[in-house]
Length: 86
Image (cartoon, rainbow, N blue to C red; front, side, top):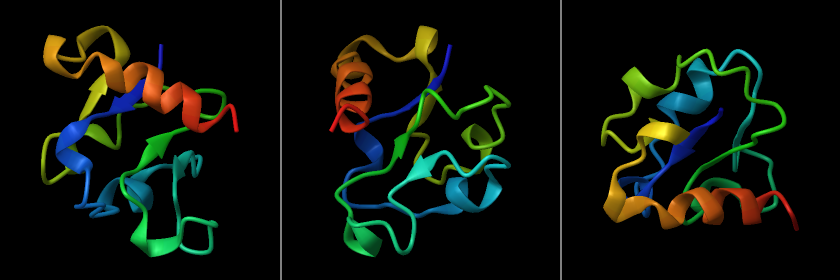
């Protein structure tokens, strides 16, 4: 299981979660091609260690364990996966 960043992140991209992540699996980071102006943040499912450190620091409550993504935001599971299939 991985964590998924959902709709509340869009346009906010606070990045408190990026700083808290011990394995640097949240993108876009500073220096990433999408840079600071990314539409939203994404969690790399291959790098995420499921530690949950990102979830409580999100100021807009946009991060959920994949199994707990609210029904209205289920599409973000596929959106997150598609981001890393590029």
